[in-house]
Image (cartoon, rainbow, N blue to C red):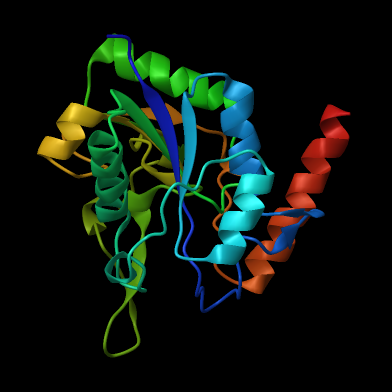
Length: 234
């Protein structure tokens, strides 16, 4: 039996900080259209599935060519639900429907900078390395070992004072999750449903592609960066 590969895009309604975040127009298009098109352009997927509890999101996703074969249950659609249970639900649904996936890529609906080429690279790393997960990371802009904290008395202190005199160039580079996508070996994931584990490998992105969009100010900044990238590429 050949490998069956799916993209799963979680996109629930009810965003508090940015209303309708997943379908709000971003540079002229509903936000969710960007990850759907990147998944399509990669040419990797037998199915691009959107997991949502919203009829409006479902309609927009299907208009873009994605599949919405079920509505996500309410118990997996509140503010406190993590991504892993949503993926597990979708993968188990595929198993029950007779189309079990061997590999899956969770792509966040709010990842307008995601590139098809990075998605392709991620699957290559997953298959070549035989790890459980592969996901996007980017480097911190400042060495975290030189980080400061504010104490209860209002004064500053270093988290790691032993590095007070260490040159920045002598400190190891540190990375954080870029929040774009996560490739999963499905069998490993269903056995241990975690996106990050000791059996994970990275795809390192440039910082300008890792835009965290949590506030309207973040949104405006990301749109400006997105337009600048389009102008650069055209």
